[in-house]
Length: 154
Image 1 (cartoon, helix red, strand yellow):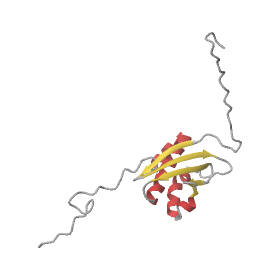
Image 2 (image 1 turned 30 degrees about the vertical axis):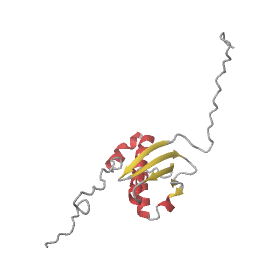
Image 3 (image 1 turned 90 degrees about the vertical axis):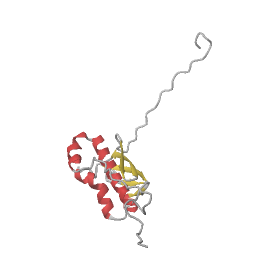
Image 4 (image 1 turned 180 degrees about the vertical axis):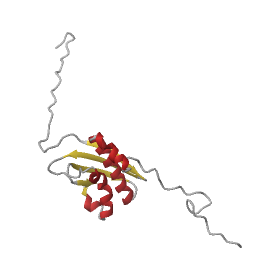
């Protein structure tokens, strides 16, 4: 008790829990492309290195065609770090191709946080630059962004 008659509680000691599964520091990054947004988590891992999980599904299930799998593994192949990290991704919005490229952008940015010396290599390959192209808006008095209504002479 202190002089005012109120009991003081001692702060509880927080116990740090460290997993023994070979985990070190996690690296988070966000990648974007068109309307797709990908939150990428890179985890240095010896046992499960090379494992990529997209929206709680293996990458082979989420992206069934090898073209999309190659696109998102591009920064890992370029930096020879495919087997070093376990990659967990949450992606939403856009189509399947935009999502694959958003994941590629996110992985590139996460690799940069993990190792700053990879910047020249990733920059030269153009993997750090967000592709600014988006869908052009539809204009009034027209059928689409550029397409016009069919012209009738009479």
